[in-house]
Amino acid sequence: MSRDRRYQRLLNDRRWTEVKRIVWRRANGLCERCKREGFITSGVDCHHKVPVESATSTQEMERLAYDVNNIELLCVACHIKTHQEIASHKKEGVKANAERRLARWIRANRPREGGGQG
Image 1: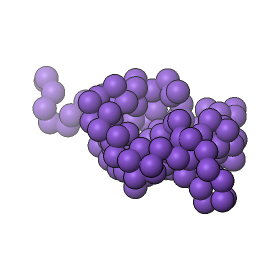
Image 2 (image 1 turned 120 degrees about the horizontal axis):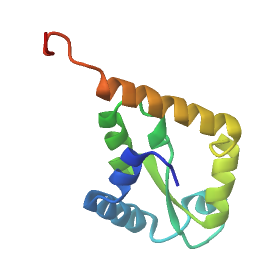
Image 3 (image 1 turned 180 degrees about the horizontal axis):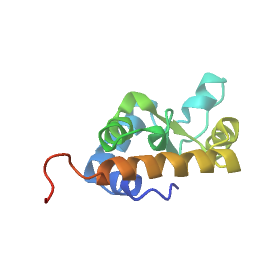
């Protein structure tokens, strides 16, 4: 699970519950990756194909988080395999996510031009 507070807030929102429900129905409760490979396995986790943490703005994070076309239902084994393939939990991936998180924070907290004290 991501350490990004904005991402965590998105997943705690009631909209995420509805999006997960839509994805589960679409997949009939089956792992979509296993199904593509000719196996039948129960799905467990909703996985974002394009990582929400890759977004450069809060608005883009929200769009990626709730886009049912960006989410697939996976079994635990496929979810682990998918993250290994994209190296999202390796040192380089964690560092890249931290850099994006910092860039978003800087943009969100940048003083507005012309609107300050002075």
